[in-house]
Length: 446
Image 1 (spheres, one colour):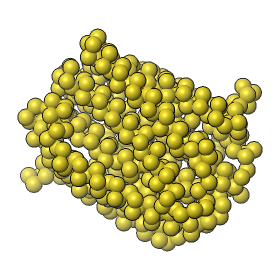
Image 2 (cartoon, one colour):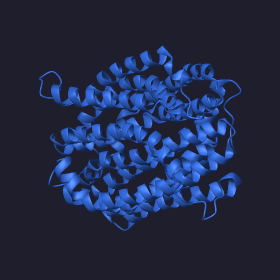
Image 3 (tube, one colour):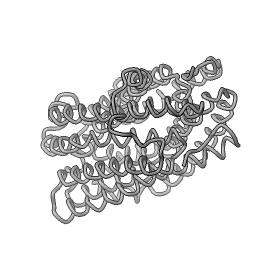
Image 4 (spheres, helix red, strand yellow):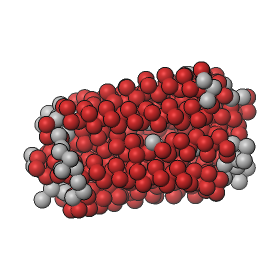
């Protein structure tokens, strides 16, 4: 069902739209976390570290899928807000073809260069490299389906249907956990079993996404002839999506540098970092939900020429983001020992993990304020600024981390304290641009 976000109380619309996204993200994070728990419990800490050492690479390819999908979603949401359905169909059809082609290209690149990327760029320890390369090679084969799912989800969110992605992720999450237990726990296939389970789940979520889109919306039922690459439409999707993809990729590339730094400290640090980042991803669920919602909210309202309503929605969205994030941070603090026991960390890794989990709780409020504004800038078509802020934050974080880890005061803790330092400065810069108000003149629909 489509949702018109140009009328009604902003915070109510934002919460209603964001909750299914959050539930879907929760499912996704839970099955990612279950993946790690199952591997750690049935194959040991070394296998857990091998899977964890691939996390920044998988995040990079996922970032490209999400970034280009956001570009398509921004255009489609604004055409929907302007009630220009002919253009909406043309852009949706071209976006589907474009994303599948990009996904196929990423699958080939990832499949052919897994060991090179892990060994040369990440400095993965030699003891972990065979398992890590095996996991990522299998994972890369499913990237085309990940790109397909993301464009289906982006088109549906642009029309105001955020519940659909929850249904897709519910199916794929349950399936992934079941297959993990079958392949890893029952068949003892190790990291290859975890990777195969993920790929099968990606295929299912992609197929279900396109099936739902076609069945539910007559507007999105395309003939084979219509599914072609319109050069003008594809060009605009790439123009809007490229800054978003770059922004998402910058974040992931920053994590590649951080992963390389983490790898210097050995297996216990890698295992601890894997667990802590999984927990950080869970803390980010309401923040990312509000960010995605603000992109659609801002897109529709800018299409309807209501910039003041966009400002009002951002203020209310930030408040919702902060309240939800605070509740999750409290849960993490109270459940810290349960988290460590669930992943079967040894004493050395557990000691490091406690410090990281505590530091992440202090950083999350910064994200809760920043990311809704980032989503708003995406929705109004200010892709350059969203990309610049991401570049600034990750650049600063890498500089801080590499500068401070050699000091006696910080040591390896610079890996996580650099996060709060970098994003605090970025937050100030981002809102300075927001309050200048020039974004109010921006519209992609002429």
